[in-house]
Length: 84
Image (cartoon, rainbow, N blue to C red; front, side):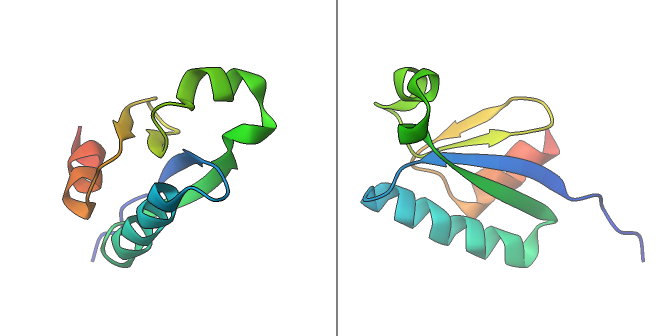
């Protein structure tokens, strides 16, 4: 059986964002079926990230190639992103 290398993602969000909570749930589901790891980054801690993402969080970004998914996204959307 051949194992895929885990793809790395960054989830941009912030505390108290209910959409970010939903995105975390989708990521948890995706991690059950896809070889991915995800780091969460709170944009409130970085002015540049606030400027870039404040109106569009949650955003899932591929750490490998920089491709981004803006909310709403599903496990299938994450899988498609992986296949690009």
